[in-house]
Length: 387
Image (cartoon, rainbow, N blue to C red; front, side, top):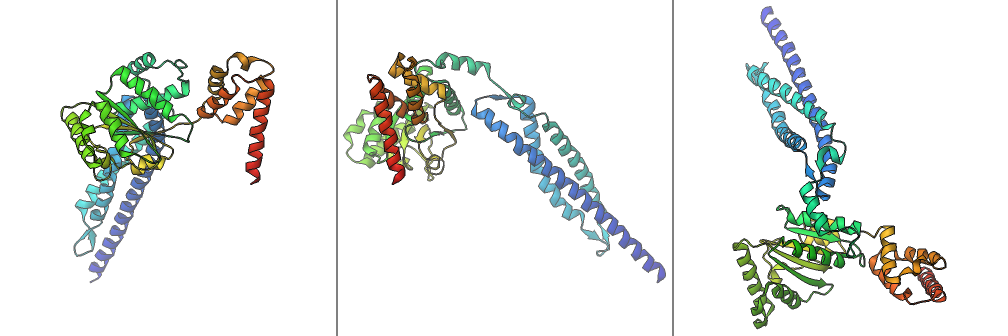
């Protein structure tokens, strides 16, 4: 009887040591997984910047990313195997040696792999570490977009490149631009459309203004005109026109034609099915691509299923001054007017619409008139703030 008790006591101590060992391995595995997850999140910020600037990823980075994603995908399954490793045999007296061995061997190997992946990620600290500017794309862009020429400022030219890059990406079917009213979204679309037609990156390009109160018939007509679909004029009802437009777009898809539909100035979600643009139950476009603008980013993302969106901000200070000068002329260099130019631009907040409007007012005005207009603006703002 004493020998049996001694055997049971020894078995119990062995079980505790094995249990503690397995727990220690599991904790180490979880810790390494957490470290790698943190690194993946960190470099994803850099990767997003690279994509926004239409850069190409280095092979060493994409290879690392694939390995890291695979390791993180496999880790949860291995942790589940821990439960199997703690199963017991001999009526609950001893751990299952086969499960214990398999888990410890796999876990130790996975810990080492994940640790190496985390260490390798330390080299990815800047955009140039993970990506580069594609010479072919830069060459093409430089031919089609000359920075500062034809009314296209550097900040806008970069945005045009980003939009065209997003449209060229097969994983994107809806691309959007958002920003406050008067920031230049519609003007930007004109420039983008011109470059797309110049480069012939789409077989068909249609454009419609949606506005705050959408006129579905007008939108249908603008798209149909761009497609040369004259039969739509024979249809009186919105549903009849939608059916005809839908059939035409499906025909283009079957013939593998690339169609881009530009919808400008969305204030809320637009029912694509009602217009006649093929889409799923979630209002996600099918068979063609959409380029949208809105003041509200949520409209683009939540209601239109936007895959990639870009914020359009105000003009840079020198760009704003250059735009103002184009309309007003050399008067901006006159010492008497310079302080007033600065004041006028300050009131425009870098918004192209306000800059152009202000410049038109000042173009033929003399110095007293400039001072009077700026004084009136100041008084108007004071009255509004006092309400």
